[in-house]
Every structure is written in C-alpha cells, then in structure tokens.
Image (tube, rainbow, N blue to C red; front, side):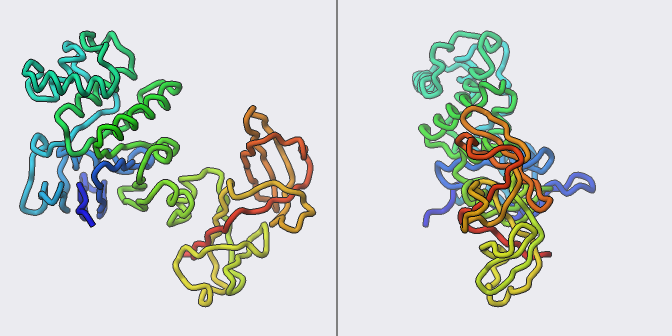
Length: 361
C-alpha cells in the first residue's frame, strides 16, 4: 500500500487554559478531497492553520510524502511546505489585475517568464476565467474572485490545497454552483485538498472522506455514506441528521432486536461491537434514521409501528409530514404526494434495514 501524501499524528494545541486540539491524527492520500466538518469553534480552522504553518502545534508530528514537516526536532516554515491556501473570501490584491494576482502565486507577481505565462494561462483555462485576465478584483463577482483565488493557489502546483470555508461568503444561490465547479476543478487538476466547512450537505455531497470534529477532537473520519449510516456515537448521529430518532431502548434477545417506546421488536446492529449473545437485556439508545421509515397502511403486517399524521406540508417535488407516535414526534420527507392519507389519520411505518443500538455509557 502506498504511503499517504499527508500524515498528522497526535496533534495537540492549547491556548491559555483552553484545549483547542486534542490528539488529532489523520492522513490524506494523493488526489483525495477531505472535508473537515464541525460547528464553529470546534478546531477545524486551527488544524488547517497548523498544517499550513501559520500556527504551531504544542506536540505531534506532520509529514508530507515521508518528509518530516514538523515534530519535536524539526520545523519547516510555511513558505517551504509547498501548500496552497484559499481563505474564506479569497482575499485578492485589490491593486493587481486578475492575471497578476494569479502570477503572484508563482513568486514575483510578474508572470513574464515564458514558463510562468504558460502556467498562468493553464490555470486560468482550468478555472474558466481566461477572459478576466485584465480585470481588477472589484470588477468581478464574488464567485469569480473565488475562482481567481483558487487559480492563484493552484499556480505553483502545490502538493496539497487547504481551503477554509471557501463558499460561505457567497450568496446562497451561487454557493452550490461554485462549490460544484471548484470540486470539479480540483478533480481535474489532480490536487489533494482539505476543505473546512460547517455545512453537512456540502461535505457529504463533495468529499471522498469527512473528518468530523467536536470540541477539538476528531470524533470520526470515514466516507460520507458511512458517517451518515453508521455514526459512531449518538451525538454524531444527532449532528449528521436532525430528523433521526434517538430513543432509550433495551436489547430484547439474542437475535439483535431492541425494544423502545415505539415498537417491541426493532432489528438492530450493535454499534458497541459486542456479540448479541452477551448483550441481552443491555440498556442503551436506539438510532432510527428518518429516511429508513416509509409510510404504509396501519393494518399491514410489515408496519413496525403506527403514528398519527399531525401536519402535511406540500413542497412540490416532495412533502414534509409531521407525525406523532407514543408521544414521540417524527418528521419525514416523502418524495411523492400524500393523497393516500390526511391530517388526523393513523398510518403504519415500516423500516428499511436495521437501526443502530448504542450501549449506555
């Protein structure tokens, strides 16, 4: 197996009495796009700045292609790490044209040498901004400015691109398109990237892997699909899916079924890694994702439990349905219309797959 492009091991950082980062270890492969996801203040940007060299870790190590960048003995300054950095708002030089902003990434900002001119033209074509070469930053849109910032970061062919909330300053109607364009540019350039975000949809739709951070800890790192479907802890489950059900439960028997307030036999996988034979009677929490529940007739044998329809909101291509079952509110998004039931009806809910049982700590 090839060595990772980037390796971080046991990174710690404190500021005063505050623990900013605690024992962070992760790797990044060639061409991989990793999103660091978490709420504001969880340590995402601090970790990015340590990778870039703008801040230093209290302890731990970092290497790029087996070259030590820092550890207890070595320290490589930012300018020698060969990394690209894109800030939240691009931060272009207002007195330089687009062309010279990009050329600045090559060193002297002139872009007059044949090789430099060729590279600037190459990244402008890659980012689809060739026609903007002679314009000033104030003459182009926010999305175009972000493309220029990306082109400037790509120009010196960095081994890794670091992007700190690169889309959050854009208008909402532009954000999705610019994000899609930037991810496509990164894919075509072959660059590996670490992107900081607090937007779950952004991370899940674009990342190869997601590193989920909370209070300075890297609590889970995996593919978007695995983090969504198999969150390691109940708190992660609540963060990645607002509408999931997380209920007190108990394992009933050795067949991996749990009992909760909604149903007596819910098929589950046991997250704690215990065998079902030794887990009978164990108290804990049961996770059922909202997208696992499908409406059906309350009389059907495959209905896991019943619920009363409290509200239906029609949104065109989907409907939002609020339900109540045994005092538990449930919110579902249904892709088709809801002509088969009305507010006040009792309906059945069947479940796709299994829930996840978390042992009580």
